Image (cartoon, rainbow, N blue to C red; front, side, top):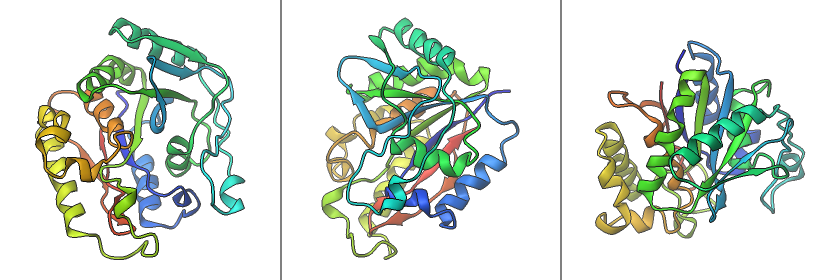
Length: 261
């Protein structure tokens, strides 16, 4: 059975500890409602960028990487001991290479928090194998092409997880107001993005920094927005995105998440 593509705005790392947060509950409901459990997860995160092509974790048991600072010890104590899947890593790299991307195996780096903080709510038992693929620093159209190259894995029961953020601007967030009402500009910006996702106007999204006045405010740096393009490429013509969660933290950090299922 075909597995879904999931785009998740992963928000603050502290959400990994917030199992009763509406966002965490929404992720759990989505996973529980899947028609079939995925045989594996291939994750792409904003927190692992590479400039020389695409890399994939090839370990039998990838480590849990705590790639942040300044948080409580409880967050550093979190482990997500999912098995790896070297065969899936090799297949993903073969598909990427077939589409013209340089590829390389990664045998040291584990799962960063963009992956495990989300997976902890989707599949808390950590029983499903996980491979993390790096996010190459490339123009949006090339990231769409990468997603399209990986699309066949869905027919093999592999859930493709893209983890980033629809609106992610550290300079505009209010770190003292996690639960404050969302800024109107952020709500409008997310609506603009999702309108183009729903209507498959991917060319407009790819040109967001050049043609959309809010583009550079939504994503002053591109790494959190870029996973969206991988997810779009992995979708199929005629698939409609199903909302998983809509909401914000710190006035304008999006938690907007959806799936093609």
